[in-house]
Image 1 (cartoon, rainbow, N blue to C red):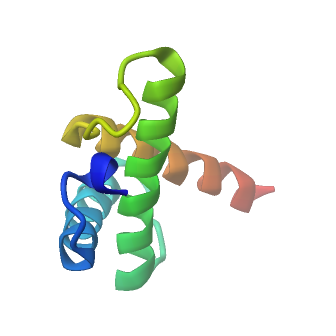
Image 2: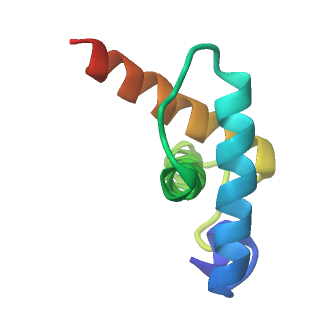
Amino acid sequence: MDGVFGGSSWLWIILVGLVVGVLARLLKPGRDRMGLIMTILLGIGGALLAGWFGRTMGWYAPGEQVGFLASLVGAIVILVVVGALRRR
């Protein structure tokens, strides 16, 4: 996880997840009912999704740090997918 988040400290990973999760929830229209822990997990998941997709496309080398905007886009993608699944 060191390469994805830019640090190996769990506190750093939680902080990055919180910031990315909050910004993703602010940028995506609509209401997303989730608490603080789910927001942190959303941000962490967004970074992991962006890292996986970036490595698959050849944009990131294995162990390379994922960009902040890529993490934000990954978190928004997760919100859109979860929102679509909840409506069904």
